[in-house]
Length: 244
Ligand SMILES: NC(=O)c1ccc[n+]([C@@H]2O[C@H](COP(=O)([O-])OP(=O)(O)OC[C@H]3O[C@@H](n4cnc5c(N)ncnc54)[C@H](OP(=O)(O)O)[C@@H]3O)[C@@H](O)[C@H]2O)c1
Image (tube, rainbow, N blue to C red; front, side, top):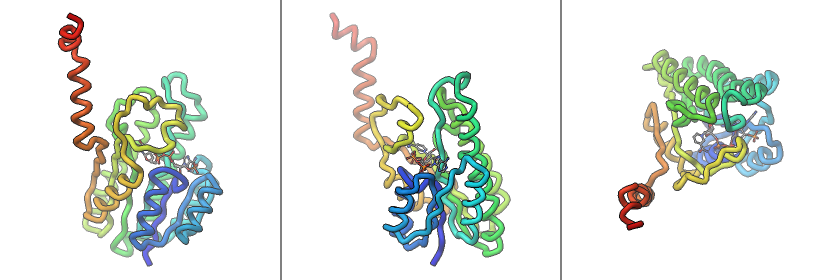
């Protein structure tokens, strides 16, 4: 049975990837820091689990060695760091963002590619973000980390063209997970959300079709209509008319 490795499988989009891949018949290696969440998902899906902190050299090594022989790598784990001005972002946060969002996924791509190229098939799914093409005030390091990943994907894709290895970059818009609370981001103005399950399904469907860049918008038609109504309602001309 083909083997997939999912980083950040303990919550949100990563858990949804794990469940969706299991439903599609994949064997799984799941990683994350939260031991109890990881063990219980592993038991539910019959998956191997690797508890590891990707911000540490030791944690990255453990996940890289668990990636040996995988046919599909889902580089999903990320953290946002403390939401706020870059000038006041704690330097430890900055280093952790770069370690988890840049160093770890890069090391994993480097680890899995030789085996995939030798086999003449394989897949890499990178979970990016619209922040990659920012600007993303309040999350500068996070946005830059996603820009790095998208650039890496483009170059690796150019190198492996015709090899049977498919590299898919996924850009989900706002998705209801713990992500924003973890970084202290105010999301009260977000009117519409994807579910993690919608993101995982759309990403894997697109990857199976061989797509290179998948944008997953959070705006079904009803939200577009509602947002448009809100913009019109708050337009100065309408407000002037209401107050006269
Ligand atoms: N939610 C959104 O609106 C949104 C939009 C665009 C892109 N994304 C991207 O979607 C991906 C998944 O995020 P999510 O929304 O599902 O957020 P989430 O619920 O916060 O999940 C993040 C995952 O990353 C793991 N992780 C964080 N730091 C780690 C570390 N130091 N070592 C190992 N694992 C670590 C977490 O595991 P532990 O808790 O066990 O450490 C968790 O499983 C990320 O790449 C994010 O950038 C999210």
